[in-house]
Image (cartoon, rainbow, N blue to C red; front, side, top):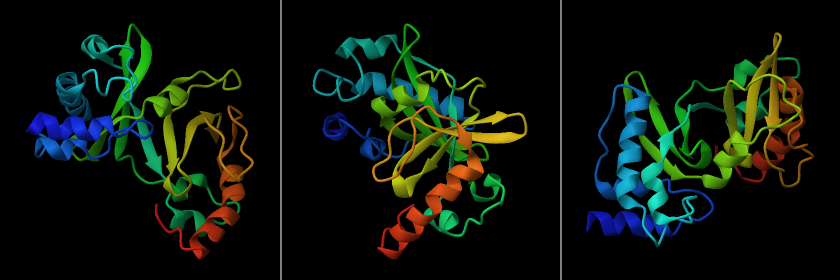
Length: 216
């Protein structure tokens, strides 16, 4: 019954991953490091992927998950709509970034990114979060020729479902979008000063909040 319930959730999440499937397996084991939690997630995933859900999770065959290894994690820092609305021109971007609470681990098959697991937590208390997000992790892992420096973390703006690669260029934090953003002029794979990026998003955040879109 545990397996059937979990697979039902896996099968229904083709584009956005599986944020709640862990709940159907009971409370996941808490780990004292994110790497241990990711290894736990990978082990559970290997027992759940089958012919009904492997494509949704980013794999080419049901058996491919058995060959999967964990890649280097991408720390995630959020910017809430409330923080964005109150962002002031000239302020450092770091003032609106949350602490790292999520880490996205790419799942690799022969060094090719196929899928991901997201680990949540802090202070030696980590558990598996989302599973899948194949399209997103492939975008995050895709090389952008315009980026000369490696990215250090991912910035997530939930109100716009926007994911940005963040990296330092000298003393300046640069943000790079990995996919187009509906209604907002954002160039993909074009690094931009973090403060300029935030300035551009503030009017849209104010409009979204005024319209009642307060999530994130």
